[in-house]
Image (tube, rainbow, N blue to C red; front, side):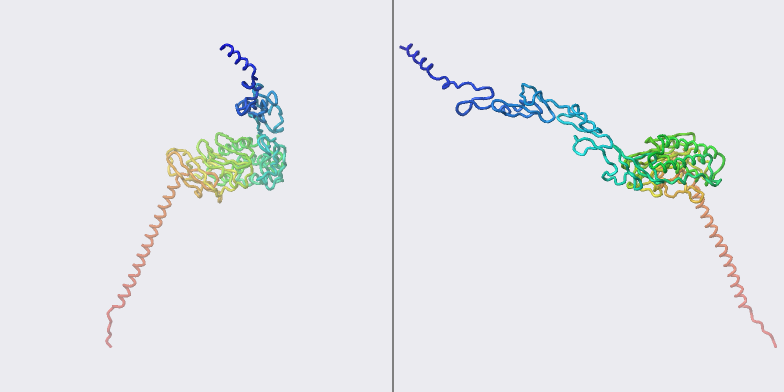
Length: 480
């Protein structure tokens, strides 16, 4: 009986439909629905956010999904799954070598690229834009790139300045046209002003000046013109210092020398091609620093040589920014044997030095320059900062210069103008002597006045005494 019951139950179970008890399995990409019977789509993008890997986006589809790379990346097939591999960076620079234009350089980065432009070119859009020419002649904030008297010609990646006669760019075609006067380089006419060897130098400089002002800014100085002229100037200055030995002081010749050297080096400096030029001969030492840019340089400037140090700033050396010609310079020129041309009664405690800058207004500087002089003798004391004044035939003057600090080895001077400078000893003693003389003269004058006054008093007393004696004389009676 029990066995029959078991077989009856088994037969009943086999007769029932299987899906009523065990639902059929879902296809790939589907799962059994949580509500009711049947299968629903599986959202693989939600279940596994990293299923597509980096630099891609997952898109769900019925029963599946696909991945798509972000811009700048690629895969083996356009729409892929994790089984097909991930996204890799596209080398945009390798695919298109001219993507930045003819004047740009492409730099690849993950998912993108950026362009760098050569000087004279720029991008008008974002960092991935192609490089195009900058028209410097009409650029914003650059109304007169060649100066008010120059004409600007735009070139591909550059520009060129054309100057009228009488103006020059000093051989640098991207400098503003500057008016240049060649008269200071005429040879000396009077014998007392003639300096040995300077006529040939002046003739050379005058020819160079005439070439500059007649070249329209398109030509002019050769690559080494400035360096060659600076060497000639140093050598001629050497010869003059040698030939002046034993000739005694000559203020007129010293004035001519210092003026000629300053005019010459101001013509030479803009033609120098190196940022720093130095020449050190037996009797002359010169250092010139030059900066060229479309905007004025900023910051401190220091020039040094064996015995003197100059400290100033580019702001002082340039002057008014609105007249910046595209270059600036500072010059320190030291004479090692110039004592023979100075007055024998004036004893120098230092080398004589000429200081010059590109600023055309050097009579009243916005900030004083600082000169540090080493004494020729360590025992020198009571030194005074002086400059060479061209008033009359010329003489040392203290106007505009002051001693900031002084000891037995060096003196620091502050000067509000430019010229040629030195240290003079004995001025303080001379002042004391003059003060002593004034005191003596004052004392002598007082003594003389007292003597005169005493004489006058004596005469007055004698006169009064006689008058009194005459008035008290006894009367004389005569008998008739």
